[in-house]
Image (cartoon, rainbow, N blue to C red; front, side, top):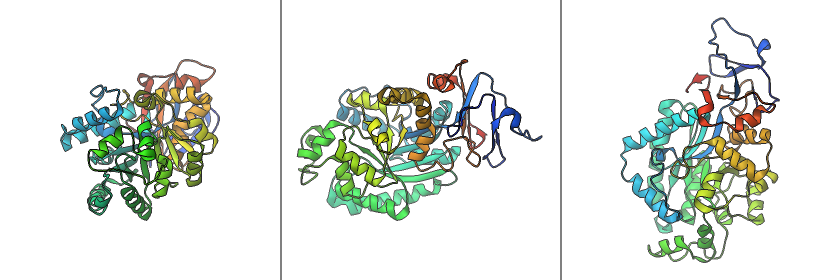
Length: 397
């Protein structure tokens, strides 16, 4: 058993109470077995906290392999076209399938971004756990009041699903799809309600060019829509978001590939968290985020899969192996980022991320061979090695 916040326990056991909370953790012989408790013995397996996926797009489940463009902008346009073929029911079914696939991969907590509202509805229906961040888009600053009225109505409609362990957040999408005025308005709304903010930032190189001197593919696309400038002077994507109140301790920055030391200073000052998606970063941009720098400077960091349109299947263990190669983390450090580190990034570490008394019984069991390092064995596992997953003590896989 790998509690994460304590040393591994050979022949360990967990007792989960009837509320779904962990009551006892320890060696098997020391953990009581109430007469009415359901008991399961897991031979040749490691039991650890459910994994935390800090960046998903589960409404895109089912589109794997359908958009293969190497050019990022062409790929985005293809994904938009694919989404246009789906009904609301299609999106809900896709999101539901995506949640079940997360459970099958050992993931019990997600942070999702999307604009259809399907994921938060599916999370509520399936009693899943995590945050659904609703996306906002618009590059015409003068349209911000109208856009915000519509966006607020959407949030009011979706808030009915934010019950139990499901939380709602906001996601002003990216510097090439959101004006400075809209960034400020959405950030103000998030601050007023105390909800999380998810952003794609410093991801493609042309995003930096857009804000530096209005060049690159995004500038070309915006120019065709009558927009001739985004920032009045050269600025980095991180500084641009900071200028509009986006970066706070409730902000999760997805990707954050193209940043420098000055950007990191801003990020540390604001206390943001990082959702690191190494395989997606490589697939779309052929680049790696400086995640070791972020962690060394004390930023909270978790691992994300992005969407299965980017990299399929959604395999958080594979992402963790890729992150480990970039950072030189030990197996113990890597598993922590996969679990408790991700929970810390999402502000959920008081209730999940480790096998600790009082936390939810979010657990996954992974079949492993005999090994001197169960942590290494777990990290080498595949999705097919996941024996079982529980969310709040409830068997979900």
